[in-house]
Image: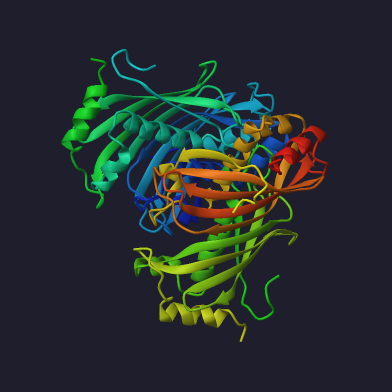
Amino acid sequence: MPPPLAQVRETTFRVRYAETDMMGIVHHSNYLIYLEAGRIDFTHQINMPYVDLETNGYSLAVTEIEIRYHAPARFDQSITVKTWVEGLRSRLITFGYEVVDTETQQILVTARTRLICVDHQNQVKRIPESWFRALQAVSLKQ
Amino acid sequence: MPPPLAQVRETTFRVRYAETDMMGIVHHSNYLIYLEAGRIDFTHQINMPYVDLETNGYSLAVTEIEIRYHAPARFDQSITVKTWVEGLRSRLITFGYEVVDTETQQILVTARTRLICVDHQNQVKRIPESWFRALQAVSLKQ
Amino acid sequence: MPPPLAQVRETTFRVRYAETDMMGIVHHSNYLIYLEAGRIDFTHQINMPYVDLETNGYSLAVTEIEIRYHAPARFDQSITVKTWVEGLRSRLITFGYEVVDTETQQILVTARTRLICVDHQNQVKRIPESWFRALQAVSLKQ
Amino acid sequence: MPPPLAQVRETTFRVRYAETDMMGIVHHSNYLIYLEAGRIDFTHQINMPYVDLETNGYSLAVTEIEIRYHAPARFDQSITVKTWVEGLRSRLITFGYEVVDTETQQILVTARTRLICVDHQNQVKRIPESWFRALQAVSLKQ
């Protein structure tokens, strides 16, 4: 569950056929791509598109993921990724997520990903100031 | 690190071009596919191929993953997935993993995946007896 | 280019990070997934969702693809898949596609995919009558 | 079928679970990744690893693919990609492929991919001389 104070942003899309596997459900690896899509859309929604961070010479590299699978998603299902900032330090950011069925709001997956700021030589860097402040602003509701 | 008593099996392959991303390294989602490849090869190596479990009407569905990214893998790099049974209960199995550079043995990723035995109607089931015993046998070195 | 008489439907989405490769552009294999997404959205737009065809025991299996890559797509770019019915026979359907930059309409990829109707035992079947008529209706503008 | 004069190289691997889809077979997009794996292994087998070409500032960018799907591959099946040089010009190379079941040699997929030599600014370039000669040497059996 998102912490009471963090702002949550939502990203909705349909499950693609190629994302299913022979069990007839979404293959579990695809949720990491869904979380990433949610995270990137989060940065669009706060007007700090992740692509600009990359253009400026930085990346947020994933260092750790915890993910729990509660119920399967299926082909063509509309799903919503709910994303929020769960923790923020000068070089590290932790995002929290819920992936739910768009209509019923049934929880499909919950997850947390930790990312570290690096430059394009893979050196750890402080998150650029303007990004840090924007992320800080949405990590608390007020 | 694999626990001292569990048997470890190794699976080696090269990173595919399609598995890289614009950071020039393997995209983090692909490691879940590498872990799965390691897990499935593990069952081949103990002569209980996972495909037979599926043919008999069962699946091992992933319910939880913890994964840490220590160093990036790159295109064409030979990597080795080390897989072992970390925990075993009647309906649940936990695998542990290290993904390393084949040559230097540098650790790239460590992970743990928890799987639950289900039938093709997605009902939780006991792991079939012969499978359970085979997995139990390799979860301890003697 | 779409033939002058066929109805064209459009599907727009952003390139995901995971779809890029170490050349910094979308890996060429992902366009097959984009074409499929366009094709499936096409069936939504004509009120004959592909998922219903599958539920009724049929699949459209890809038998042949021709694809040309004109310009690369990049991370976060908004792209549009234009899809139309290029040929229709009792058991076969050919879709044509253009993938363009949503804003500039620059052509990125052109393609044609041929699909055959099969049942879930992989036997070739006639396309069910209601589907055939719906597809026929949009293969000509009038 | 490979032309009588070209040298054919083989690459064998098992189908991964993640590569299947809800039809229970390998999703058609994965064959582009298999062809690429065959092509890259081809360059290893002729001692001109593709990774070195990239390190030297060049890439072979895919410009066109034709692919035909003859029979489905399934999870855990051992498949073999047969790769050969079908055409070679100063800036262009065409590879031909057959993907077969390793054991029965049943043909699953046939394909042709055309690639163009570019530098890392995406400018078309001549294939470097040593590469051109090595590829020329294997495009004819003698």
